[in-house]
Image (tube, rainbow, N blue to C red; front, side):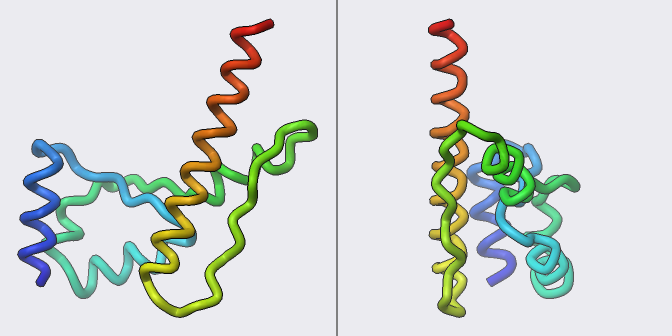
Length: 104
């Protein structure tokens, strides 16, 4: 399984290390290092924690960012869906801020 995932990453990354992006990803990175070393080797040494990106927007008065409720299930796909929704919300918020700046 590790080799298949690593090959998939390689076929989509053009030789560039991939960023690990998500919420509370330290555990994920440690799991990959221990159990999927070939996949781990395809990752960039830096990671993006979506919660760290989301919080400054969420705490800024006047900025409406839709907070994504954490998943209540214990399935990886639930976490993936929540991370994708969070990423979309952050992107939408940034787009709205940039559009407002352009109009002013």
